[in-house]
Amino acid sequence: MNKGNKLDNLQLVDTHVHFYDMNHPELFYAHWQPDTIHPTLGTQTRKLGETNYLDQDYINETKFFNVISAVHVQAAIGSKDPVKETKWLQSLADKHEFPQAIIAYSNLKSPQVEKNIEEHCKYKNMRGIRDFSFGDYLVDSDFHRGFSILEKYNLIANVSVTWKDMEKLVILANKFPYTKIVIDHCGFPEERSREYFEKWQSSIVTASKADNIICKISGLGMGDNQWTIESIKPYVMHCIESFGIERCIWGSNWPIDKLWSSFEDVVTAYIKITEHFSINDKTALFNQNATSLYRI
Image 1 (cartoon, helix red, strand yellow):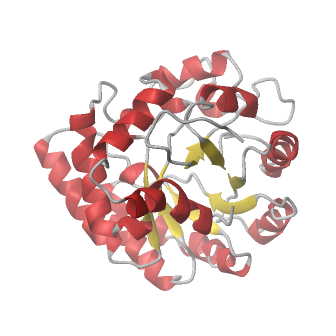
Image 2: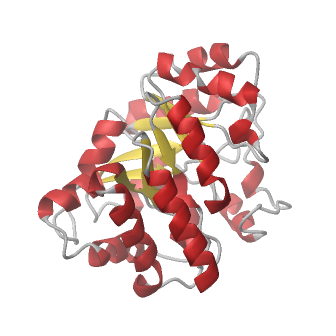
């Protein structure tokens, strides 16, 4: 457990981290490869694959910020068997506590999806699925069939959607009202123009209408590499105002956001933006909501 804190004496639960071992014989990290072109970040993520990033690296890097728990979100992309990542992450957790919860990958369109989910669920820190699909998958009948299985296993769905797909996400959420759905990274705002902001803003209001959708406030550096507190504040505040503090959680997106910031920069920014919040609301955003959602 990380002890000591420079910032407002809060205990933090970080809901978006990635650990990876580039030398692992059974795991492949497509987005960290030296020839990769990331769909959002282009060639920037190649730098991440130059070194491993393990649980102990994260613990050491965050030790002054009282991060008491972390949720690992699928990092291995392109592995033959995605359960191998869950197995590896559980072995890290068994040794050093981190990560306390695991969001794994499973192809929800696959006819074998339930068998795959059963294998993931053999590991005690397993909490949810991120299907990193592309295209119009939110309305795909095969995707819906696989998605329907999540409730049976009490699993959370992490989704990577932009403003363009929020209406489709709400339809999915209403069809499966007992499955919690987490929107990653505030819906991936990719531009900082007024026109784009207004479209994004409207989409967040749309998504907030479904009670089982939760907004993860994280990863804003990806769409604004030169971000400042003032540049990201409207996004943070709009998410909180739309969803309510009770349906928002916080994440660092580490170490991806490390490409542009220090961990202290990121945490300090969110603390500053929420400095006028009550201690109860801060605790909800940075700890309690995630602790409850991920059963930590």
